[in-house]
Image (tube, rainbow, N blue to C red; front, side):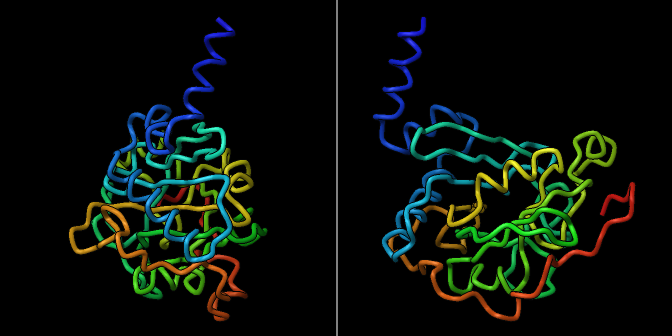
Length: 237
């Protein structure tokens, strides 16, 4: 049995990335995965250092489903599959509206390079730089960060019919936040997908219009710990 397990692991590692990742995450929409890998290739072609870990959010799924996958790209393993919140103005249980605008309280689509982790008003958090001009390149200035939030709770969602909503941040369960952030911090890759026919990145990046993320983020966001106020106990935004 041990020999068979080693053989299977070796076969997965030898397979092309999309095929290998589909095997370990069969419930992830293959179009979303293809778009994420296309974006990653474009960002690396633009000069981004190769990422070890890839996160994919499928915002076409309801907030009550686990719609965040995190992969180890070298070992072709699934590390996390988690609940993730969307922005208050993106929708109720289903996210349908996305924006790059400050104070829109919406989630942003597209590819992100992760930056440093820090302790902010919502605890341990992770800054990100958006890599797609006009789609998410204001993410740093908007202080869209990954952080834990008490409102990302499956039991509350079962009563409410949806998770609590952020001000645009992809918030996760507090119990997993630190480990997930440590996996994704310091130059890893996150891709937020939605089947928007008006967004070229919905199916891939044939023209590779991305930036590397080495460009200094907008300084206006540098001093922001988070774009969300502390949440009172028991509230579900």
